Length: 63
Image (cartoon, rainbow, N blue to C red; front, side):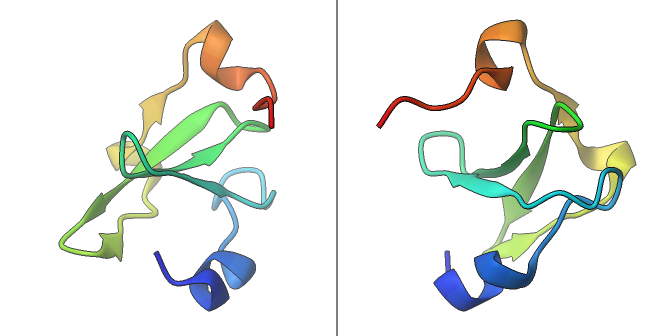
């Protein structure tokens, strides 16, 4: 995922920044609790295409 693109993308629901999850190849918004799929290297930023995060996934990532 291109870092420049990540820097400008926000969740269409909450307008909060999204994070790229390499394992699931999704853009995650912890504020709205949604994960947006990336298909053919294109983020699908539609609420209807997003999946709801589990309670564990909503927790901040440990670095």
